[in-house]
Length: 395
Image (cartoon, rainbow, N blue to C red; front, side, top):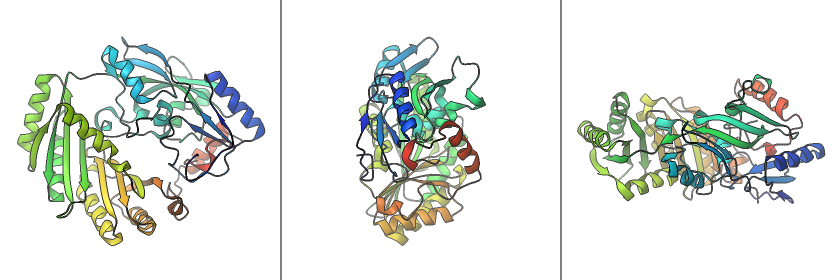
């Protein structure tokens, strides 16, 4: 099953990049529609697929090609699971600082969707960490960009192009990332609020100070007495620096704060990353100006009341990006998307997950923007026959 109830008759699992190239070359000659997959955690994302003739799984491309631990870089095959990669990197006290809600998420899938979470505050998105790629184009050509390659193919920054492309431009063979050292200590201040103005004020205060946060997140959840707000400030550094910064955070915030460390902290951030992906009718990704957080919370609560939907929101307070989980009917989901797209408080409203019925009523990517002609030209240059991704992605 590909997602949204669409099935494919044929699945191929290449053992290496050369076999991946051979599979795509054959599909291109036959004009077969291809969907690329790794761990399968995001197959239901994007538009409902059209005709799918072939699924190409990168599950066997799961090797660490090179770990240059002295340079803090690693080259990894696209089918390797992020969790397995970080277990290997930890042997040298390093890691790839990317969040994923899905244990089966692979390197290729994370790059293809540019999936990120709370760690984006310090480390950015996968696109920001990517320094080189090996790609297989639709016609089977193998190209490299970044790293030690002097010139990118056709002048494109291919690593940035494929990040967030949902597999619609090329297949990722390997990816090279800059890594980070594992921190010696970590701790989180959790702050509870009952008023949206208070959490917005404290979030802006912390973001404007000279803290070295690993993450600065906000959360809106339904509560029995009304909406509940939570601010999470994580510091990961030396033991002394971590302790000092956490104490300073507690002195600044106005809400009811408490310290979290050890296994409880690990569980806290695991749940924060997974919260938008619990059973729900729809998950939305959106952006906003960081200083308009109070307006964003007001908007979400108002639309939730109008539609009768339960709203769970997790976001990067200093970045202005996050996810909204909507639990409600299909009608509520459609109305929610329309309301968000009509409001100036938020932008780039993308439906990542929704029922097939909802996807027939809203375009998950939103109205075409000024960049569409450029994106279509790139798609035509890299995949002229249009065999990749069955219409699921932004191009």
